[in-house]
Length: 128
Image (cartoon, rainbow, N blue to C red; front, side, top):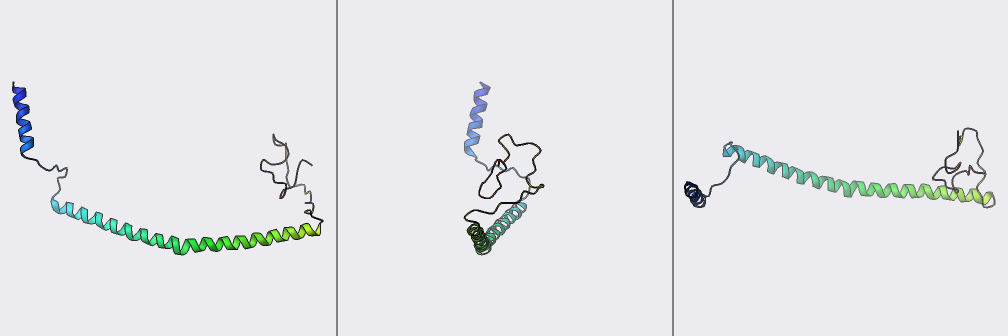
């Protein structure tokens, strides 16, 4: 019987006086200081985020566009030079000299003498 009485008393007390849970033993002034510090961190983070967004849009994007234009110009000059060499040699690139120190192989690759990413337009064919 005491079990039922004890549980009924607990239920009545719980309903009658709701109280706020607090896990801190610090006074309210310390809590206010902490909240103010968190607010300052939030404000600083917002300002820093805005700064880096502006740097990205006004510095990085134009810098990347400039680099793209420069690389395109260099590569188009290189392609024009290759085409000029082909015109001078009846539509083919001149033969690359077979220097002893180039493409030295102690033993062939399992798939042959050329590398795995062989490109016949820009590399010498070692099978021939």
